[in-house]
Image 1 (cartoon, rainbow, N blue to C red):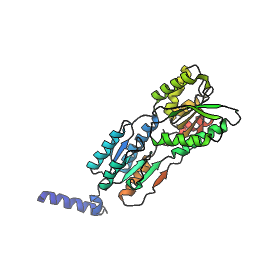
Image 2 (cartoon, helix red, strand yellow):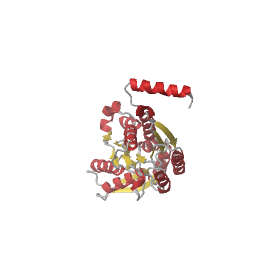
Image 3 (cartoon, rainbow, N blue to C red):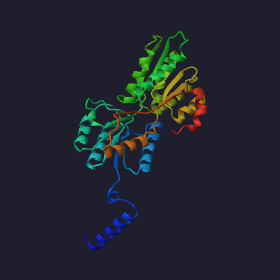
Length: 321
């Protein structure tokens, strides 16, 4: 070490002590968080990404961000890159539920803790991640089902439902379907007559709804969409077919994004079940706790509501996404 460098370090130490800062604080480095996002398939996901980026900035965390473009192989590559970079914490929203054990075992071997954000993984080894934070997707499906059962309680039936599923194999698609079916099976008048993935996107939602309308036409009474973006795409298809969305076909959706509130205010969407994307602050707090060696709950559930069209105009000004 040169005399000049020693002098500079001594001056910095003296300045830190004079300001009441312990020397340990000087040495404290920024937490580095590697985050792999599903993609940018919807309004919800864009808001989720923005929440994570701004919360990292506010928390003074160095965020290494990767967009998987809805491909599992891209996420696995990103996680391996984070391991190679020796980040402090890895977090990701898995594209699909299965197929993660190998790469998560690599993270575990590298002693890098993993946080699941928004979506879960299907693994028998729960030691591969520290915590899973996000919504209860099954309960969201149940909320959608309960609203529909109540809405149609005086109808004799049949109530023919078409379903726009999310990405095949993803946690929200699996769980929202399961929760919805759990509720509607209590009354045989409810029948899902068509069910197909719309990949959580507006364009695919419109395309699949067009196919549903061609196949079933006026037999369709209800559309259950696993997210608002697909519902908004489907609304276009319904209007182009000369039908009135929310009147000729009841539309039940999930997410609670601004676009859904706008559709409800316009009288084109009946209800949206909330699924909050604003997980950034919660994620940064958990990352700090994990690095500090504090215990973190294995499951952190987001609190959410349900918004029928009647309350949309009143609620809209306070929506953050």
